[in-house]
Length: 342
Image 1 (cartoon, rainbow, N blue to C red):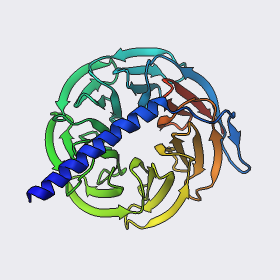
Image 2: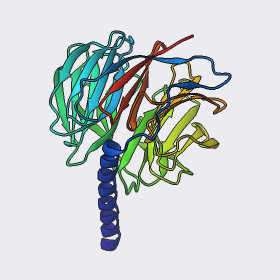
Image 3: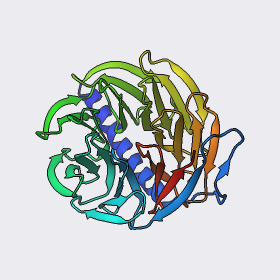
């Protein structure tokens, strides 16, 4: 028993050190690409760059867009959050409260609450409209690597380096469930199904776990990746789970059966971020190579490559709910806003 506990502790320690190394690489790695945005034959909706936001002084790690598609939130390693007018690119508010890098953001679907998590082992809850600080939750010494709020805006799930997933009641800010089930390494990514019933988690152990969000019961393990699972996304119809990994691949899974439907190499280096368009037709992936690639979600055909706009890794991506805009956050400290034509 003691040996098993020691092994888990050593594995966790090594994983956290590796995660620190990944953070350093994210900041330092320069994209080898110097191309302009390129479209491939047969793609339907071109993405055109409309503005570059330069308010952060360190890597932009996370993005969230309000339900009305008017406001963009960004989190950064510079410890701040910023709220921007999505259409004009104007800075609305700067939110301060974290004592270390912000790693994750999630916006409640009702448009009332923004949650942020970071290396300071805290989760901050903010009033979206004004940027007012509401409450601070403790992650007990673990980095908060990922956040997702349920579709009914009642539950916040947080993933952490302490190999746990916490479920919080968003209104009372109280802890309701802790999910573990032999997770021995840090949780790096979370996604929730549109009906709010299934929570997906991925992390350093290369396994995707599907949980029943209501009780925290483990439903299924999905195996196949050969590297850390850095990003997850679920299609708007709730049928497809998409996973991205440092093994350079993207995998598509049937969310109901857990069957792996498709695997393809997406980037030259690690896949760091994913986003699905609100109509479920497009998948966007961001890589350590500094490129953003747009795919047909159903066929996995690459439609467009957005390269050259960022000089470093793409850490976060977000589609606006109205489908008109797309945002990318990078380790080059900038955010690009793209218009989706057609």
